[in-house]
Amino acid sequence: DTEVTQTPKHLVMGMTNKKSLKCEQHMGHRAMYWYKQKAKKPPELMFVYSYEKLSINESVPSRFSPECPNSSLLNLHLHALQPEDSALYLCASSQDPHQPQHFGDGTRLSIL
Amino acid sequence: GENVEQHPSTLSVQEGDSAVIKCTYSDSASNYFPWYKQELGKRPQLIIDIRSNVGEKKDQRIAVTLNKTAKHFSLHITETQPEDSAVYFCAATISNYGGATNKLIFGTGTLLAVQP
Image 1 (cartoon, rainbow over the protein chains, first blue to last red):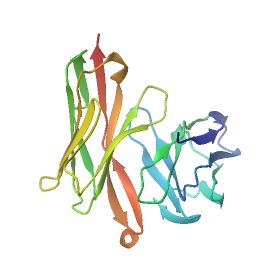
Image 2 (image 1 turned 30 degrees about the vertical axis):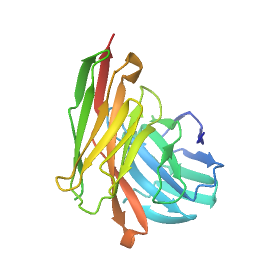
Image 3 (image 1 turned 90 degrees about the vertical axis):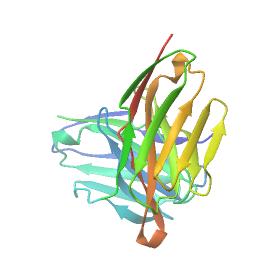
Image 4 (image 1 turned 45 degrees about the horizontal axis):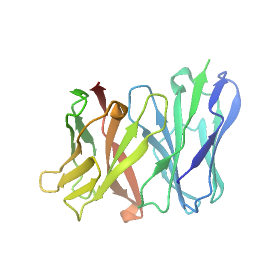
């Protein structure tokens, strides 16, 4: 079964904090994605990594900084976030950029 | 820009009835159309998908149809059960960077309630 693991499950942080979200998959997938989902809305694409290179950045503010240290890991570094950044952050992976995407359980982020 | 319209936004059916959710996409180059089911507080789960070279695909009680000319695709759930209750999202790919990477655009979602 496909499995994308995200940590932490919940995160509360102040606007001046620095934190990171982590995503891991061991399925040999070569494309990984970050999405943001607000309540009762569809997921919105933020970043795509294809073969460990950033291939899509959907004009995301610089307070969100993605990193792909290796083919199994994807991080999202957070700094100086705003209250409107509170949302569910979903990671997904696919075998390659043209194959089905499978989501992790997400990190629920609250900005105080 | 490219978008995906989804209807209805809410759908209530009796257990055992069929449910149909419809989506329309704008990018004629879209070639992959997945459907995701998202239960409250959980991750979107891929339930079925279809590529543009196929008109219909079925998996047990779930089927998807695609009309490329009209740019429509639909999800059909037969013999609905209470556990089918969830939000369903359609999606379509658009190609960026000369087709090197596909991007998913999601519909706005349909809240399906199956009444026992």
